[in-house]
Every structure is written in structure tokens, then in C-alpha cells.
Length: 168
Image (spheres, rainbow, N blue to C red):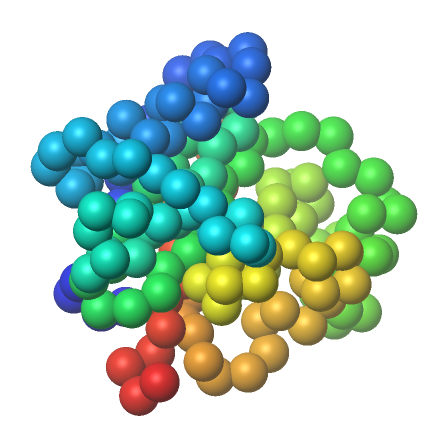
């Protein structure tokens, strides 16, 4: 991961999507250092019109929010808290090898959610986001991004960060 990437995670309880979004924007403000107006492009990706030199990514769930900023190029972040996940969802977004690994893990739900965050972070970094669950199946294939798991300091929360590789 390049040195130009910074990220923050915060925990809490936000009952509405609007409250989660506001909390993620507050994290972004801490990273950027001043008040920022966030806009969204045609794919729904956030950007800062006043700071075109920065690439940003935001994510939120019921119990956590995350923000990432990069001066080196596109970045993607995703965060998820423990929730019920059905086998049908796993089958729609995982390769057979990934499914086998998930089912062999000690906690299949959290193993799936960790994989989900990796895939969503990569798709956000690429600027496409999730275009139906089929786009997630092979999201980790290819060499245009690097992805790493983030330490959320809670066993019920997982996150991942993705950035474009240096040679892209």
C-alpha cells in the first residue's frame, strides 16, 4: 500500500443511513483537515470538488464507519459488522474455492464478510462499485489493485482497504 493512503475507522451505533453517512463524512473531515463538501459521480463514487488532488472512499454499517484518502491515486474502503448471511448470497458472490475456504473456517459468517469487504474495496478503488452480485465473483482477480485487511479492534467488525498498484 502506498504511503499516500490514510484511513480511519470509528465504532458506534447509527440507526439510520443518514446518520451513518454523516459519521463517515466526519471521519473524512478529520483526514482531510478541514470542512469538505462531498459529491458523487455517475457511478455513485464520492469525490471532493474542492480537492481534486485527493481520492476518497467512504463506508458505513450499523456499528462502524470508515473513510480513506489517497494523494497517490484511487482508493477503496469497505467495512461490515456481523449480520446474518445466507448461503444463496455466498454462492452468488464467491468462487468455488472461496466458498470452500469460508465453510472450512471457524466462523463462516465473518470469513465471508471479510472476503466481501476485500471485494467491495477493490471495486470501489476501480471506480465501478458493485454492479450486481456477479461483478463481485472475480473482483480479486487481476493486478491493478492491492488490498489489505484492516484492524477494526472488534471481533464483530471487518474492513478492507484497496489502492491502485504503483505501476498503474
